[in-house]
Image (tube, rainbow, N blue to C red; front, side, top):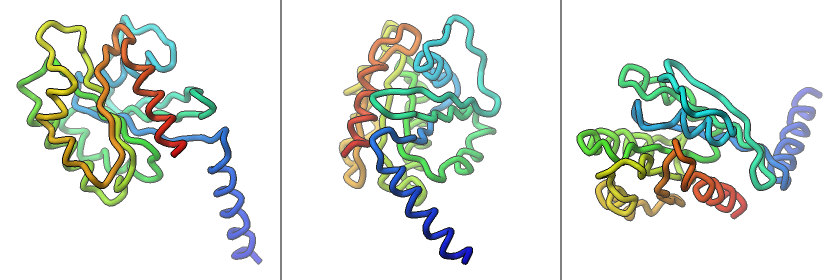
Length: 185
């Protein structure tokens, strides 16, 4: 009886999951100081003037384009990164935030992204890379970051890079529009 009940529940959950008003789990990752929490606050229409580094994680639910987006912002300090894998399960979209003005850490952030994309739990999960801090003088353009990180070689997943300024809010909506469109496909 319980096996039948759980199968019925699973099929019901699958139907709900494919409904137009669906809930999505978005994982927001990137190195410390990339702007993940500022981006999350911007998505939630919260004040972004005072943001403190995330020591663990933040979760916010945002409604966008008929979707309820449950966004998990996980801290990016080097001692926290090994725990990122604990949050991979049931991820619908991976958003990776890069500080476009931090050229010294571009290789490090590229290595971290590569490692994430190799994990089986994130296989085929759509990837949005936010090239953040475009408002900072000398910041690399999104196209330059895509080239440095060899994003064009990603053949096994849908991906997009979006230049943005989480602080000013520019480019954020365009990135989230892409998230919703890629999920609809």
